[in-house]
Structures are given as structure tokens and as C-alpha cells.
Image (cartoon, rainbow, N blue to C red; front, side, top):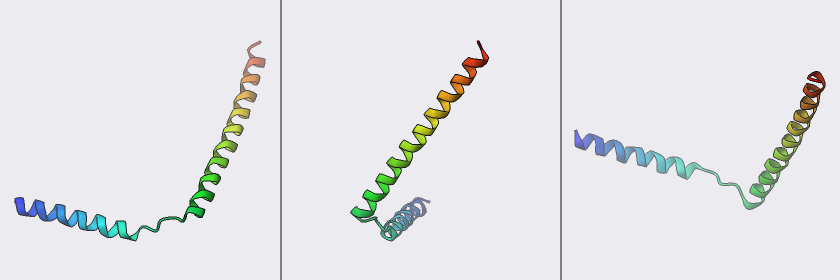
Length: 65
């Protein structure tokens, strides 16, 4: 039983190594462009949520007067 567990662990790590070698890492240029895109989208969505929150808060305040 111990041999089977050891073989399973070795097989698992062989699979992990094989999958690791299939990874295609982005170039520095691609990484920079993607990072800028993520930050830009995050800022835009943050502004939209802030504007919606402010508008809804204003509307609720009008109703509760």
C-alpha cells in the first residue's frame, strides 16, 4: 500500500511538471499592456459604481425628506 501511495505522488508531480512546461509566459510588453488595461478598467468601473452610489443616495434622500 505504501508503494502505491508513493507511485501516486510521483505520478502527480510528473503531471504537474508536464503541465508547468506547457505554460506560455507573456512577454514583458504583453504583461505591461495587460496590467494597464486591468488598472484602467478597474478605475472606470470604480467611477461608474461611485456615480451610481451617489445618484441612488441622492434619490433615497429625496424620498425620505
